Length: 57
Image 1 (cartoon, one colour):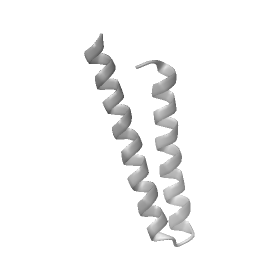
Image 2 (cartoon, rainbow, N blue to C red):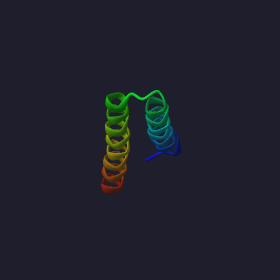
Image 3 (cartoon, rainbow, N blue to C red):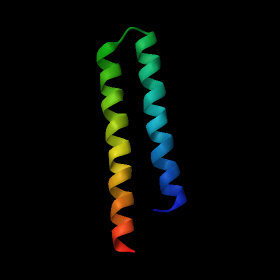
């Protein structure tokens, strides 16, 4: 995995976690659950891409 794609996945994951905090501060628990799911999904996709690129090399 290139450094740019790793940075992209990590920044998007952190952004979703920040949005989780913002939605909790506005008392929107369903929106917070959505952002938690999206952050785990993004990090999981990042790990899958990393594993595929390691397997290729």
